[in-house]
Length: 72
Image 1: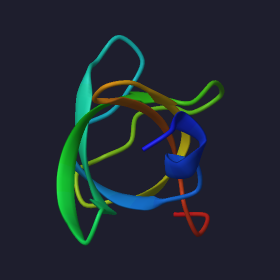
Image 2: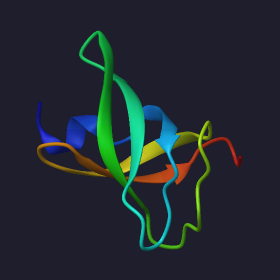
Image 3: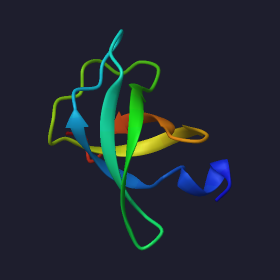
Image 4: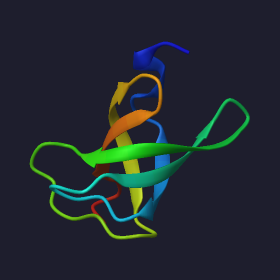
């Protein structure tokens, strides 16, 4: 999977994401769900567990930058 193919995918926060924190998100991908380490996208504050997020950048192999989806 190339880096750009993950951009735009939705996930759910399973470990709080925020400045100075390495969080975790579960992303629906490759016919299943996988965990990725997550950082907030620039301009994002703390993102709590259970929040739906959008992947804005993927750093292989297992790190993503995320922003809240749906204005949540």
